[in-house]
Length: 180
Image (cartoon, rainbow, N blue to C red; front, side, top):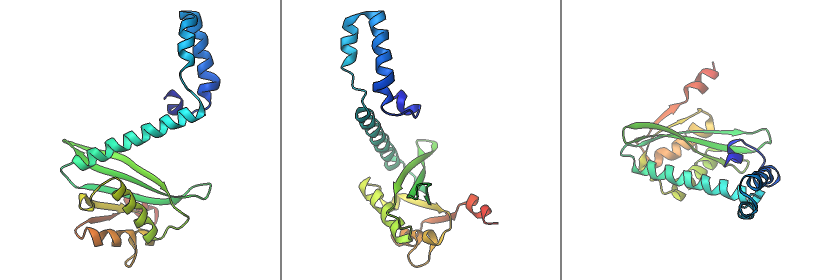
């Protein structure tokens, strides 16, 4: 996973790392080691698959810790459009794990071009259902205060309050001060 940690192109494993490792194995250990090392897949697809599997496993572990928490969780959500004009919904979670307060990246999901409150809620609701996180586990939610997030008729917060009437809502302090 050195390739992923260094944000290198996935094909660098097959083109750069593997040839160097084969040469080192040949010099240090001989031809038998080279034969064994050749069987290790480092193609672009193999690296991508491993990264995807690791990502999935990390998310499963996080969800397990969230569901195990005895306290309700806090969610922070923000939607933005990246430089390639793709709308994304990003979320962080805060929860208590044993006696420690944990802040973790929860997800970054692509939106289908619409950033209405209904669309944001549907993506978030689908994530909650897919990962078997109960809505009553959510104690607070923090957003940027945009109409899609806090709109009184169909904003995300309004929809969440329908499911969790006692939820605490906050306007992100950083966004609030940016408006001054």
